[in-house]
Image (cartoon, rainbow, N blue to C red; front, side, top):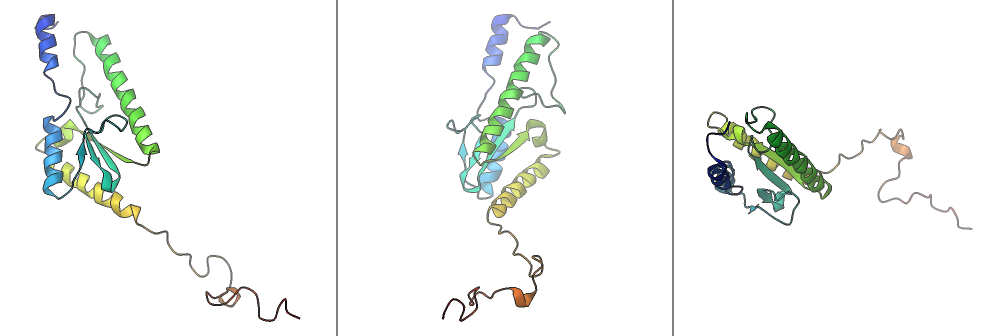
Length: 174
């Protein structure tokens, strides 16, 4: 049973922010202090990511554990359970669709949960975010390894040199 009437509950729920939440501000301040520049709440991308690092090809979603149904510490209210199950289920399926679309577009997608930004784990989480940003950025420039000389099964004498044509001199001339 709810402790407030419908009008009061509606007013309380209307004050819950969808942008510039405390977890978002924590991550954004950290990234900015470390020299990363980003766009926030980009409406042109699926799911309107909270943070977009265009240079790095990364989008970051910062999810509230309740609203996005975090399996670790998300919980359902005891009243109107069916409504909340449907609501949170729709949110989760929408999140998965958005992330899949972003991946198809070539973006790397990161999800940070509200519980990961609690004081006890905040520093570790922020450092992991920075590590993943840098790792992803470096992976974009990684060249595939050069083939080893003996991987093809050919012997060194059989392999043409870069300055030599593959055909021998005098062939095809009469």
